[in-house]
Image (cartoon, rainbow, N blue to C red):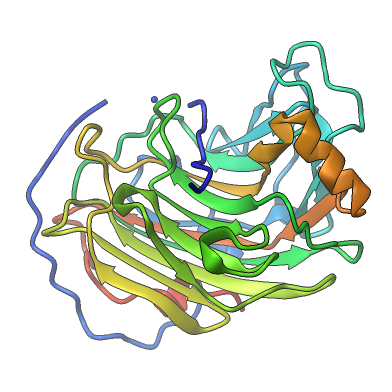
Length: 304
């Protein structure tokens, strides 16, 4: 049985939706002058990290920044998320630094940045585009025994898995290879797609995700990595029990490291230091009735 991701974080609104996809129009990527918006606001959103002031640490799991549009979510050391020039750096070692006393975990497991406010609860039919580049550090070692994820959209309910995620597998998970990127739609679990991509140390990938948060009649999920489309389905993208879209999160979440035995397995193979980098994030949020709703906007969010 595969290990289900659970995340502690989240109530409801619905609307009908008719999907009308417009033909693609060649448009350049959104530039830094676009600026960001909060999670629930419609429109174009761009976060260029070199232009954004980083927050003062709070002695807790993290803090808001970028005018309360984003939030650093870290367990169990705030400074596992830092700026590195025009990128964000995520660095997680289960044993170092020592777990902070505010944290409920025994090991460091998470370094993420997410949209804010939390529990955004996008109404059914909300459309979103996400585009970013993601780099694996020069010291990156594939972990044969423990999986982790670098992107998720979460409904905000404690104990509930994300709606969708991009996961780096352990050996044999879903029948795949260690280090292989899988696309997982937990709403339709076990709906998971192998990409065949196994990043190496120093490698950068470009990612675009397009979603309409809906049920089996109007939901949509598309995922491209390095320009190749790996997932393209009209499918359920929200839970029946919690019928709304959630918050996006980027970074590192390595939940198997909650278990000391699994930590030790990573240590034994030299895979206990995980460092990655996030480039500019481009995002579009549209509600039914908004201008350009359903318009192909791949070129607006795709990394340069």
